[in-house]
Length: 122
Image (cartoon, rainbow, N blue to C red; front, side, top):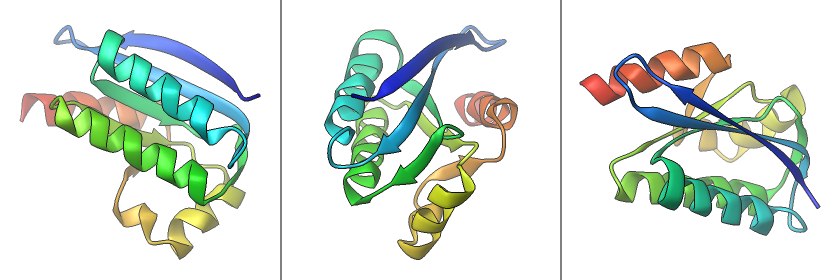
């Protein structure tokens, strides 16, 4: 079971951004739960999602797949999908798989939120 903290942020232009912060491992045993949570947030709450990975110390290919699926879901509904605070141990996985060039990755939640407002207005 994966614990996922969920916060809602409203940008200055009134857009709702969902911030999801999973903790623990994002692997074959938990990725499907995270995937469902992403789907639910994007379809019911907001197409704009930030995933804060500061509490995820391990991610495998199924974890990456759930993130890619979330990004595709957000794209389909003209949303945004960003990742921030990637745990140092998880960062290596992103770099080795070249996923760091696929996702929009930010150092902090604040930067990811700023990025969200920028791309929505452009």
